[in-house]
Length: 374
Picture 1 (cartoon, helix red, strand yellow):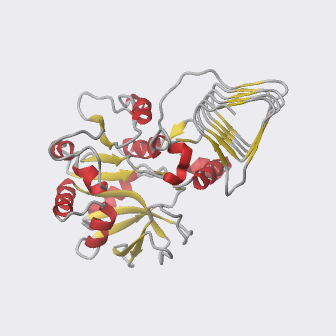
Picture 2 (cartoon, one colour):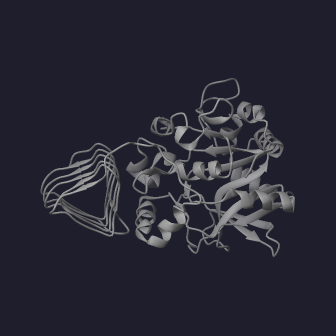
Picture 3 (cartoon, helix red, strand yellow):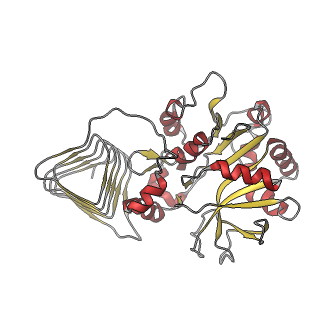
């Protein structure tokens, strides 16, 4: 277990390519996997590693995130000492309340960083969904004497999505990062950062101040890339499933991957449980006319129609004659009688009136925004 580190998660990532999914919420609060939010995964990873103090840097559309996390009870972070700290932007002499980049965002919570007694910091984003054991990563960091250790996974996609943050690592035979590429049109490496890194708190504070005094505000571009040759940066390889929330198409594909038992076994490894907000609802109810195949169905659902190759979140209602295939239906949505949904994403509280037909494609799933009636 890790007993001398605290967690710092930046949840202010913006993604216009997630479209209506992030219209009223941050990327960290995007629902995933039937009952979870994106933030649940990295937060659970830290808790499972023994981290008892975690700060969440927020920026925009964070009300949904704050409602989901509450005091951190479900993650055992509601404590008298340490615990979960939500760090929204606020006006001070040093902080204008609007971040010009990740350096600005992390520096805005410098008071939290300074008063934390731990020597090491695990710095992470909230866009990547994975179930990683951080203890071996910390052990490697200490044994190699690295200044920074970055978690990475092999990504065979050498044509990154437009406007998606894409940091590639080029390593030598010892695992040291010798070169980095950021948002390369044709990356030379398949080793893509999972946006999780370990360093000492003192080094983080030094790097932030040095970048800020030179008018530099992007941590990846202005710190990591420029310090690659002068700092000892090591890579730590992650072999498991990684989902990155960068676009609607990517969100849909990564969600559908959960229908593969091997992916579910890896992402929801019982040795490293993923925690989320608890809602005491009744078990899903199936009528005699319901037909459900190869789908994930959360509690509280009432199913009277057909569901195939789909993911249903909590409290979804499927009326008789409805047919849902290859789709994602989020919490509290209602699908009316004789509705056909194919390659569709329904956000929370959406109501589809009887007789409607919505059909998208793998490369272009239809998204119905939160609380809409169609």
